[in-house]
Image (tube, rainbow, N blue to C red):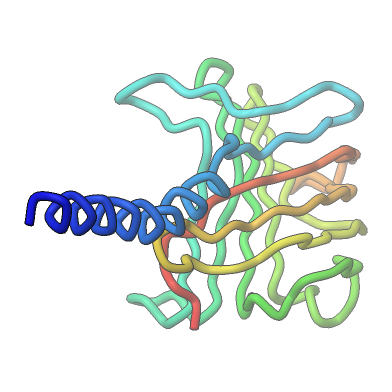
Length: 182
């Protein structure tokens, strides 16, 4: 009887270990850091937060309509809270099927994409001249792990007064998506 109990306990432990392995694998895929960074006229830009006052990163995605936001609304960006600079990209109608490279000047993005870059001197660059945006990975939460949105971008922006142009290069982002998308 004692031997049977030992075998039963060992079997239970082995079964428990293998059932938890899937959870540990899903958690391992979430390793890594969220970021939104680029170069503005050749100078590095990334978020710098102030704890309990200002978040360094902004990311929101609404697959379904929410309040006055349309389905597929997405906002991503970074805040340099120390220098009061911010860079925000907003989209409408984005879905996980949007993977791949797209010219931001194309008709499919012309009305749905809005950049907003605010510099230290309060100059705002919110008009897109041209650029590209590539989504490498876009998936929602699966089982026990968060989904992920990763990609790259580059663009040229002009200020509100139409007097100055900025070139954004080497843009890249990585955000976790905590909700299921389908």
